[in-house]
Length: 208
Image (cartoon, rainbow, N blue to C red; front, side, top):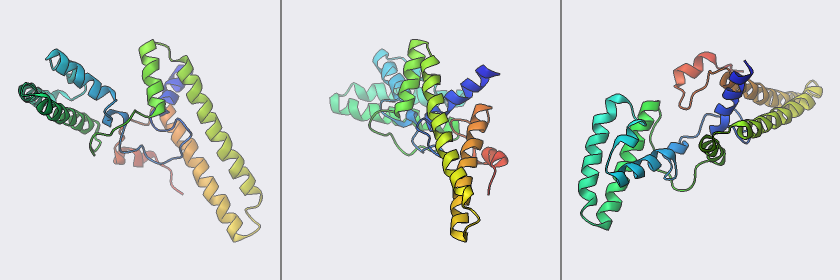
């Protein structure tokens, strides 16, 4: 059971590493970035002239579309450096778009810059085969997030009946605190996903 919860906590790494509240995951996940794993696989495939490395990132039903895009990209790449740059970008976008579609998430274009710090740490852990440090870091960040929100809510509760304004401050703190804890519990128990569908999340979400 403990291992299951550690895995769930590690699942928070994508969007909760620094104790972000209960807002939904950002539209641009790490797979949207030019330095992300999907584009990295695309670069490997183009260098080898073999589409196989990217097929794992798309649904079976999208394989033919990717193979066709790959074929066109290789043909255009042979026409010079400028054509290669354009062709590569086209293939990166096609691959990421189909990958995101498979997650049930929108594609809003490729993003420049590195992946989120927490995801970079997660990727390094996978490369090294050691996840203890990652789990420890995430656990500390989550504990800090809970501690801060609990302290704020508890303090606000002491004065909640002094005035309507004080009561509203307590309610605002209470809502954030309980949503934060609820989201953590949902993720730890396997209820959260990288690209959770709205109708799936709505069934379990508690509203105030």
